[in-house]
Length: 182
Ligand SMILES: [Zn+2]
Image (cartoon, rainbow, N blue to C red; front, side, top):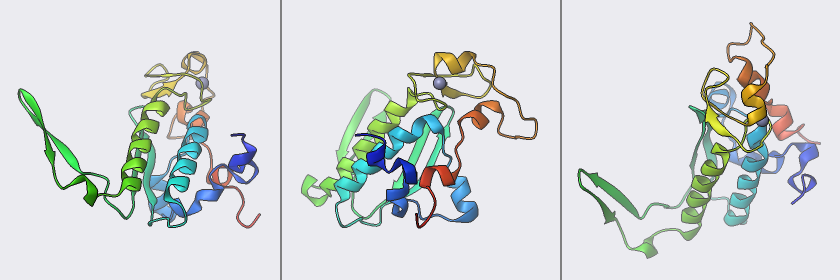
């Protein structure tokens, strides 16, 4: 998969706009774009799009952010992905089946698992450059950073409430989605 195949010139997520229906303040709150995570996240969107097929089942991201350095992804779609839950007791974990396996949607289950797997992968990718990383407070706030960016002197813009590490990593919507109608 080359960058061109992801529609890089139009923005890596331009093919998957339907997954991001939120608008204005709600949108700014829900989606935070970090440069080093975008290729991996775009690959996840491509996998989900392929799993959905022609019927997109109202799939939509409700949160694409980070929290304490780790990715925090949330979504909604038509179809049930959970068929069991684990009850945590003091000395055991009890798995409770809620319904027969057949009552649930294979595609929804597969998508849910892909998202969980991708969150694990992104945890170890630098939010600035995508290189192998660990979650560290070396630049102040908890963030997933590679060895170079852990030690880098990042430019400080005193007007930026996000701080230098976020300023270095954040990407605008125009870059992520490309120009409309192009
Ligand atoms: Zn880096």
